[in-house]
Image 1 (cartoon, rainbow, N blue to C red):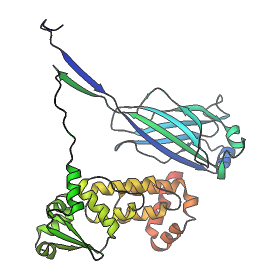
Image 2: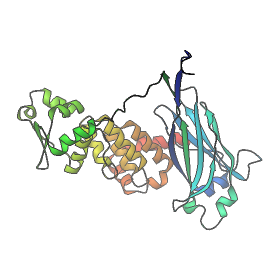
Image 3: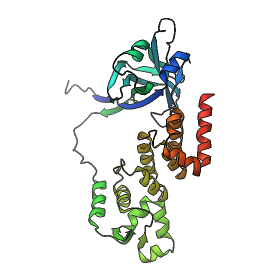
Image 4: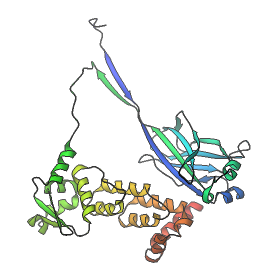
Length: 347
């Protein structure tokens, strides 16, 4: 009550969800069921930087009660924290991209290392294998898992809270982007395929260790304030410069491979990771071998591991592609690494 001398305190607790999806394709499913191969384990994947997860499928059920079902589980393999809280759901994806057979857990589960949660009776096996019209196109299952990780709560103490001024959002990236877009106050020239682009030495040096070295040492580029960029297309160069000035991700759908090379050459580590992530999300049987080559060429360890895991899980399909055959002829070391990863998976 106002005026009675009571000290007031107002705290807030924020809880956020981080959503993540993972698709796993299991081929030759009829053979797996008929040969009663037991449990199948997906390649590992990460939701955060320092954890590892996988999915397991038991085609002939976990026990006698579930013998007529597929059993499906989400497994935490390793994590720096003592535990994490997760909600999850599974779908089977049709050949038309439609979600079928949804099962979800509406409450969060406490995962610790080595623990799994899922559905012992996920779907009747006979229904999956024989129900019209096409339950298993190309004799494969596309299993999609959506995970919602409950992030650590954030408590914000607010002693004797008072209403303050509305702080405007930071517009630094917009303003630096304008300097680049409008060529204002520039002091150097970058030449790409005969086209000249005006830029700012201080910004280039602050963002790229390669540009910094050019301007710090008594190099021709530093004396003339003119730099030839011989190995980039103008479109890729402009996307890289947009990132240098604003820190925002460019459109990676069509040029992630070219931008990966640019980011690697000019020391743009954050852009490099963005490109790796885009290439990982776009992995397919057709481009997996090329993605492995790019990852090895540009020392992208995380992408290389993901590409090897993908090739291991889709070995037959990948080995039939033209990129794989090129790699067999020109890069036998990478082929040997891929076979080594496959051998490790099977043993």
